[in-house]
Length: 190
Image 1 (cartoon, rainbow, N blue to C red):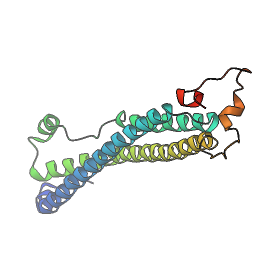
Image 2: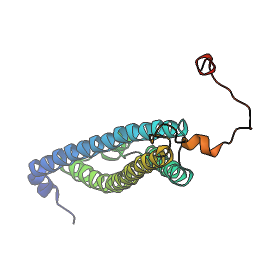
Image 3: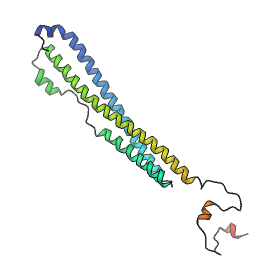
Image 4: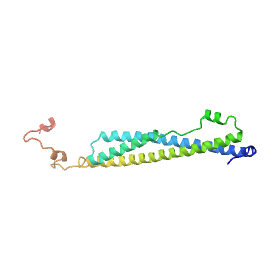
């Protein structure tokens, strides 16, 4: 749709309003993306900390390995958020060179069209970021649940109370040589 110079002059107030709204909407879009980036940093840090915590514990092998796999997924997807293309913005030199000699109305139309295209591309980047953040968060939650189960399953027998005279689970699993006794000075005094 081509406008005459008079139509462009008549539409200038409307075009200024549209450009102002598009500009502020793009700013909100970038801010939202920055919030996703910040959340991803904390998520990756939490997954790395949880991985270190589990690695420092004795855990049940199957659920522990599944927890490590979940943490790797959380970290990988969290880091991949930062590797996505950055949001597009208007290039000042390009705008000046392409529209510096245009009428105000023509420049406003060109700026609005450029912003709409950039907003649409940025929306696709933002959608990919939020989907990857959701996968990363889900993997972290699954990893924490699996870690908890793994540690509880492994320590379940170790924390069980035994009655006096009943062998402890550790004592039944490691037989000691017959006739050899080790103990503290308090044990030997009896």
